[in-house]
Length: 571
Image 1 (cartoon, rainbow, N blue to C red):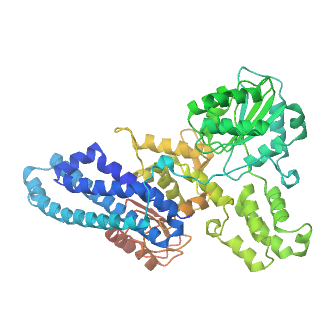
Image 2 (spheres, one colour):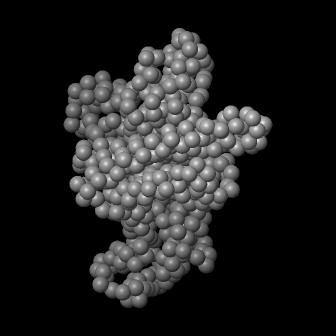
Image 3 (cartoon, rainbow, N blue to C red):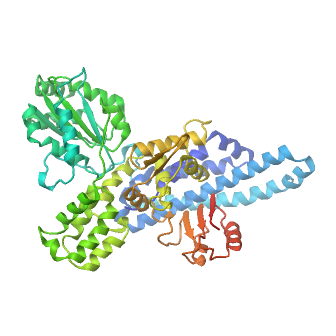
């Protein structure tokens, strides 16, 4: 589950090196050739990083190689920052000081600075050359972000009705939509939206197999939509679901005729499950092909993305709510015990109540942990699951964190670091846009295709995108702003992808931590010293006033050479 972030960081550094502003700085300091070499080597290694990240779980050596490359990227980023800072100093002093003062600061210092930085660039190039030479042993293949192979998630229409708990109201809402006699020109489409694992597919299966629905529609079609939303492949799947006919060898024209024959004059109900496509043109192309059905035809789309819902829906989406605690507990006991067995294990039921609370109403999390414990009646095993962070528990391919990670895999590279950074906040921490955007800005996470776009506008766009993909959930709408937070399970996902990068204070690690939350009242200040060398963000608090904060903060500032964020709360 660990992510290296090497691709994201390399992309960010390459973007900085290629920017017009940096071109001017490199020319001004006479280092353009050295940085061109850095840029070329970064690009060569970066081309195979996506393949390396997919394979690293099978090779410790490859994982270490990725870590070295990532650290080298951070070192190059620090070099860029040093040049930018020196250039800013030069500009400020030229505007605000006399010629004698300018001469004092820049009469000899530029030569010394260039010499020092020349050595640093040389070392960075040597390190990258060595990393580039070592990549040959791993036989990596160049890949682009757009063709990353994600794990396929295949679904089907069957569901055991008795195993579904707490969805009667939602089911009735969907059945009412399907039976509604009113029709417009277009086939009505209802999107079901919600976080991964909340039960969208299960609800669609429940409705698909409802007896009244079966008798109302002449044709029911279930399609699990592939991640690339290939219209030809979708036509093949629809035809197979409709009449069992294989049509893989047909061209698009033949497929279109076969599809029209399937739908012609029939009132159909189609479920398009797990849709990720945000390209409106592709959706319009598919929708046009489905126009051959009779009046009363209906489509239900399940998706994690509000943008997908906006593109596909002809009516407002149905936001699937979290299961109630009582329903979650009922589901958990059903999975963890044989029928009636829970009455013999009051101690385990009490522990199970705590386990269910950490699932926060997400059905797949309940199923994951209930299934995990069905084979053991050892109290310690149950306590371990209750007291462990979810991201540290072993999970099978179809369990909650792998399911949630599909959403992360679909994020564009520039959002992945922004999302993972948010794991530095405690669970249930309420954020406001201005605060989070200032932290992202300080860390250089905001990337824009437009040269003069303001950071607040870029940041607001990022937040809206993460909200629309269910990574954030809005908490309170205020007059001029709003607050939002991460669902606990999404927070666990962020922790799992940010391992070694972010330390949110609830577990201690040393080495390459970049973003650290540290409570001096709860942790030994000497532990802080081990994390300062590469630190970029430090959130320091001393709620109980136990530490000599002033001298400690002075030490932190003097030793943290790459710090971009320093937040001092209750110190």
